[in-house]
Length: 320
Ligand code: ATP
Image (cartoon, rainbow, N blue to C red; front, top):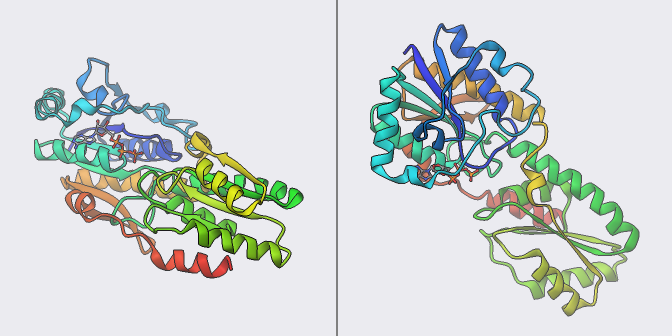
């Protein structure tokens, strides 16, 4: 394979730039041409120019969050006719393979291109860590560290004033960020969409804590589990404890990627190019047991990532 393309799609994630850099430099090292498509799948179908990437195109980006290729949500790419048009445009330019960096939605787009004969490799780039087959996705570690940093700061105030802090984090469909940051940050309560919770029981725990001189508590809520404002208001009403609510929002998406995310992105970017060189489309790059392995795109799309119930159990025990 001599000519390939690369795009980033869906929500941006810290480390996407490091993955672009690795894929571009590995491709050039292997004597391939690589084209950068801007704004995800939208850039494949709109008449925007495709940039031939050079070594210098990816200079000075390894430490930057976001994505130099920009990203977009392009719902029209779900239509077969639009996918066929995109595949035809790629073929016209002699492009035989594509690297798609994004989450599961982006992987559906990649799979569609693969079926149409453009070999596609997905790189899991999403702060959600919701992709089957890989221990971690690019951006998750940075997002968890961002939440952790916020928790450390909020805990200072919570302790000083003796308050209950309810902190809402990203995770519309899963509680991976809440669980990892809650466990690492010693949150007293973690609410995730995967596990039902009983607010009365939580209130009883908080009051019990106060009785044994506990000065503050942090409740971490994944946005898909409940609204932090509702949880805060109900706790205040049921217990009389002074409560403050913080919604972390989009600060969780940006920022300079952590060392772990840069390493993961560098390895996955290079591995994606290797797969295309071998003509192995229809795969994602996945981290397992310290190595990067290919996992079939279809498997990654259908299997679904299991919630680590053992970690949740551990968080419950440690927050007693
Ligand atoms: P994140 O996890 O950060 O939200 P994502 O990749 O899951 O990332 P989505 O918005 O679900 O984000 O999808 C990104 C893009 O992928 C969509 O805007 C669309 O262009 C494409 N896409 C999503 N679903 C499909 C599908 N079923 N078929 C083809 N393309 C799709």
